[in-house]
Length: 193
Image 1 (cartoon, rainbow, N blue to C red):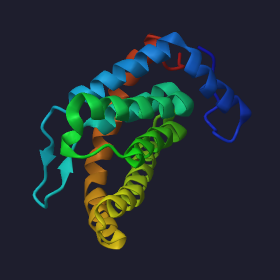
Image 2: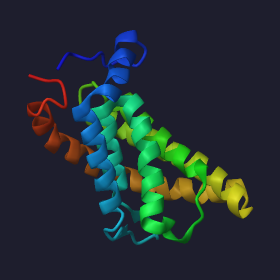
Image 3: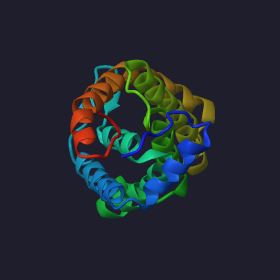
Image 4: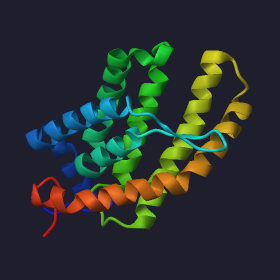
C-alpha cells in the first residue's frame, strides 16, 4: 500500500480517497462494517445515570472512515443508513433522508481526521467532537422538521447529552482503533511498516 498524504488539503489525499472506491478489499471491508453496524444496533445501549445512552454503531462508522477514507466512507454512510433502516424497521420511525445525510457526513468527518493520519488521542477526540456537533446541529434540525419541536430546545438537550458522552465515546473509539491498527496494517488495509 502506498503512503497517503494525511492532509485533506492536498490533491494526493483526494486521489487516494477516490481510488479507495475502486479497491475491492476496501469495498468488502465497507460491506463488512455495514453488517457490523446493523449487528451493533441489536446490542443493548449503555444507559447512563443522567439519561444519556451510548450506542455502539459509531465505532464501526469511525473504523470505516479510518480505513476507507472520505469518498468510500460517505458511500458507506449512505448504504449503511438505508440498509439499517429497511432491515431493522427503523425503530418505529418513518424514513427521512436527513438522517441518511447525517450518517454520511459523520463518516466523512471521521475520515477527514483519521484516514491516512497518525492515530493520536487528540485526533480521535477531535473527530468524535466534530461528529457529535454535527449530530446535534443536524439532528435537532431534522427533529424540528419532523415533529415541530423548537430547534433550540432540541439542540440544547442533545448538546448536553453529546457533551457528557464525549469522553467515554472518545476513550472507546481510541482503544478500538489502537487495538485494531496493527492487524489492519498487517492485512494491508492501512499503510504502515
